Length: 98
Image (tube, rainbow, N blue to C red; front, side, top):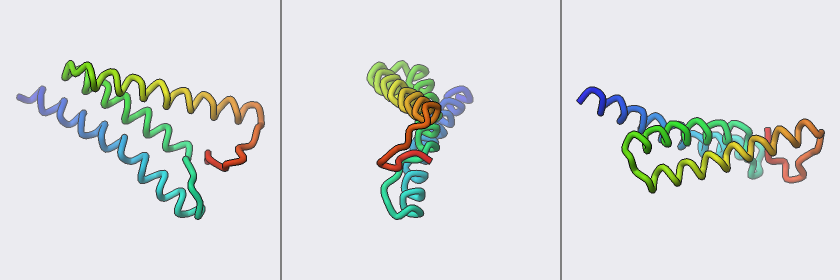
């Protein structure tokens, strides 16, 4: 029973991290008075997605596993693109990242 409780906490923590990304995006957009996807959005996406993937693997849920794995790939790719853009000194005309 204790082990199940630990995994339940892990699952809820992952969901909380994943949900926090929307709060971060909303607050940042409200402050700037325009729609913005801040860098923290992608970090919360990776943290929440990785935690939820661990939970999905523990639960042996193939649908959940595939969904979280695919999401993690996208979140990490976005971070790679952001850092490449910063390295190359290109500006974002849409003003997305902070």
